[in-house]
Image 1 (tube, rainbow over the protein chains, first blue to last red):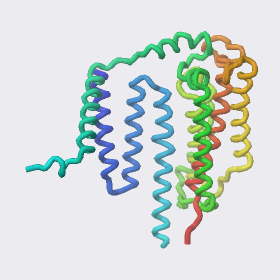
Image 2: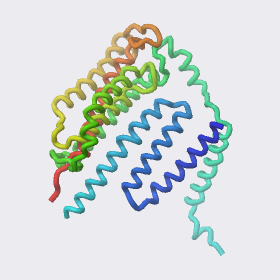
Image 3: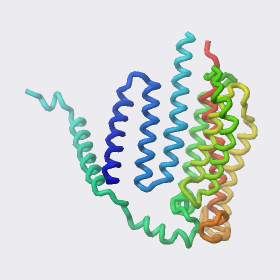
Length: 82
Length: 236
């Protein structure tokens, strides 16, 4: 049963990864990237690695997503100014 | 007629073969899901409680059995933040990209900021008892500062002198603890404090001390990184 849950999360992660790469809208792609991080948090937790899950939840879903978004917004604001 | 040599390159074939083999292995692994046990893991868990006095085996691997690797990780993080600071120094100014007023965030952040800081220190201090530790707790503290940057534009400013002092002092004390272990017990990052009873807050000898220093250092560094990215100079 838990194997099927892990397998379905794994397939979702593959679909999300393809969507992240193929998306034209970059902020949209960053949001999908944060969703990818959330899926891998569940995967790490189910593989009995709660320490890694906590790290991924804070770094992958929190800080790196916000840093990507802020960088994108700043690049756009510069393009608008020119 | 498909010309295999022309239409499909060797790299594509090799990569697709590898991916399919890995997929089959992963699916077979997931269908009979069980915790994979190796001999070194069970051995470390077996001797963990007697040698380190820490309830969390991952923490004792990170700070005791592989303390030298943690020193390398902290150095890598410091160097990467140093590189980002070197590259973005000219762009740093007191101007925030999020210039609009968000009243909801502004009201909520005053309540949330101390709670997130408290949770970060909880994760750092309980690193030898529960999942988490210095790195995770430090990044949680930095995320509280990120919320502060987003909510209050120019009203919130960090004291860079104090931040640099915290970072330098905690990094130096981290290495000092390792050198004290070398001096007293003849091994870098060895335990020279009493172990205490397993599962208590004040137990585990030198491990909580190392994690407090690592947590302070990581929180100062990630806060500096977030500030470099959020604040930007107006380009004309």
